[in-house]
Length: 269
Image (cartoon, rainbow, N blue to C red; front, side):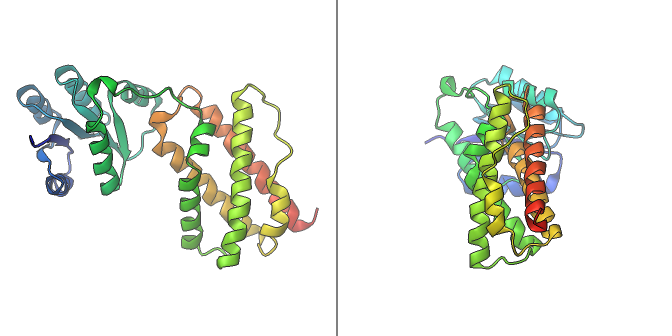
C-alpha cells in the first residue's frame, strides 16, 4: 500500500521534529516546513494526502494562505489547522469553508492521528461539513466531555467534600445544571428572550450544596463557566458562528441565575 504523505507546517522547529517523528511512527511519510514560502513551494511541486498547518506561521492567519493554496492545487487532500485560540469570527468562517477540521493546541496526539485516519477513510467527494449547530445542541452532545472536565477541575482545585458521596451529589446537580443551561439556550434559540424560570437545579442545591461555603459555590460555577467556554472553543467548527455570541451570553446568564439560586439556598432565603 502506498505510504500516505503529510505536509506539516509550523514555525517552531522543535514541534516540527516531534510531530514528524510521531507521524512517521504511525506510518506516514512526513514533509515539514517552517515558512509559508516553503509550504507553497512543496504544495506546487509535490503530492500530499494531508495538510496539517499551524494557523499562525510567523504572522497571524498565515496558515489560511497555506490551506487556500492546498485547496486550489490539491483539492482531494485532507486539510487541517492547528490553533491555540480560534477567536476571530471572520477567520473561523474562512476555516469553515476551506478546512476539514481544526485541532486546538496542545493537541491530543492519539486523537489527532485518529482524526486524520478517519478523514482519509472518507472519499473526498463525501467530505462535507454537516449543517452548523447552535451552542445548546453542542453542549447537549458534549455532556460526557463537560462532566469529565468538570470533575477533573474540581479535584485540581481541591474543592471541599470531594469523596465518593460528594462526587455522586455533584453529578446529580451537575446534570440538572447542564439541563437547565441547555433548555434556556434552546428557548433563546427559538426567539424567546424572557428570563428563564422553573429551574430543575435549585431543589437539588438543598442537598448538593449543604456542606458548601459561598466561596466554594462560586468556585464551582466559575470552573463550570470556564469548561463550557473550552468545550465551545473545541467545537467551533460545528457551531453556527452567526449566533455564538448571543448563545454564549444566554448560557452565562443562566449560570449567573443558577449561582444566585445556590447562594440563596445556602443563606436560607
